[in-house]
Amino acid sequence: MACIGTISDPCQSTPEGSKTAGLAECFAEEASAWNVLLDRYWTDLKKQAAGVDASNAGFGITTPKANEALLSAQRGWLAYRDGRCNYYYARFALGTIRNPMAAGCRMHMTAERVIDFYIDLNNKILND
Image 1 (cartoon, rainbow, N blue to C red):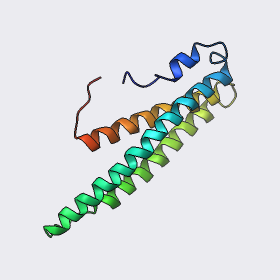
Image 2 (cartoon, rainbow, N blue to C red):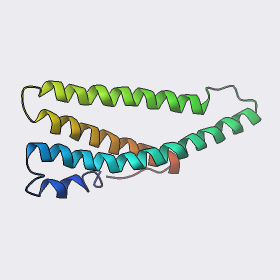
Image 3 (cartoon, rainbow, N blue to C red):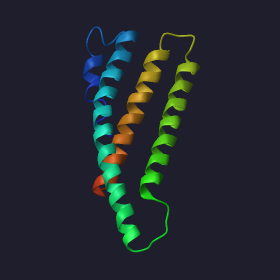
């Protein structure tokens, strides 16, 4: 997605951002911005799920609860994100690039999750 890297790409073109430690900081700065959106959309998704559950209960539908399914999915995603990004850290453990690799992974995965949340909230399909 074109929006990923909006903060980290310009940051990396600075003298400090082009160094190994700077790369990790650039990725972390953008990940922080994505986390703000992730938290905002998470709150909205929980409200949406509560509405789905209330609607389904009104019709006597006995399906898995949307709120429980949403929480389970998010917990699974967090475990997957952490495991995948820890893999990158371990894979490059002998080099200084380990921190930027793990930070870049975390930034990209968080950004992609925000986009997933946006799509879920708006029932939209985004094109690359």
